[in-house]
Image 1 (cartoon, helix red, strand yellow):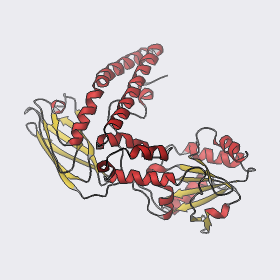
Image 2 (image 1 turned 90 degrees about the vertical axis):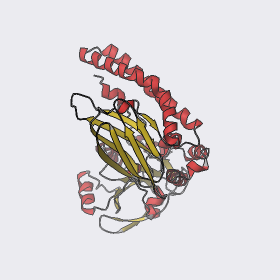
Image 3 (image 1 turned 180 degrees about the horizontal axis):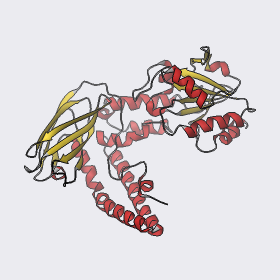
Image 4 (image 1 turned 30 degrees about the vertical axis):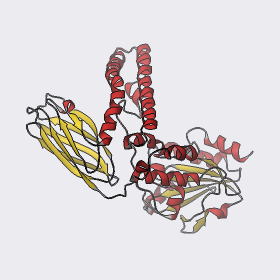
Length: 388
């Protein structure tokens, strides 16, 4: 049966999403000064990122007044949640955009949603984006209510119809974001919407680098802009037809294995850890490739990215990665959202958001495929490519 969760899976309908990036610049203070209606009492919390770390803070709201302060290196999206003392009143949620060295004013005569926000240029841009979202924000809750009613009544036909309308809203929202990003080339909000394409595997670095270069120098030289530029540069060195960057790592016995020593064989290079979800379909695919391609001059180089060697040994055993054509190596670095600065990490742009990741490498050491699809019969794709 279709459910509302299935319709909205993977994306909040009307919430702005921004890319998380490494920050390097000097921190500058910001402040939020707020005043809701004087009858408003409760707790107000804020969430935002600074120095690539999630910052959470909360204050008591007395007679509608509240204040926050902090440090930023670049503009940042923030979410505010108000929980009234009166438990019969629903909590409220509001999104704003913070700029360094800026005081944000939030004033209203009722609850949090009534406040008018005045801040820096990023807040102005966010307001302009939300104006375009407004028709969707008005229609979305109506459709969600209808969907739930049809779901309770078991009306599959109307559930499907309303589900399609909700999907159309999601598509329209993304169209608005793309147009906004293209038309706001000096805006950190616009850049953040565009940069979601670089948060993970970069499919077409040449195309994205050209798009990136349309943004103003002020945007490109922010810490996030520098991170995106670095990721695009690395992705450009990992295109098909290019020699795979060489490295040497230890196997389970402690013996060093160099990637280039495997020339003459096809290599499926797979970077992974046990911390991503879902893990099981990937481990199943690796074992299936191992079985189905055992006679195809293919070796699987499984690179575990974590500093916990004992856990690695346990995971290799439990996942059955112990067949003759699987070479288990360890890259003894616990990956975070920050870029990995080791030789291997820099060569393959490793970070928490970049694994699992794979490359199919030919007998000459050159990349044949970037990012093998492990969820759709990968053994057939691999056989087709290496047996041409």
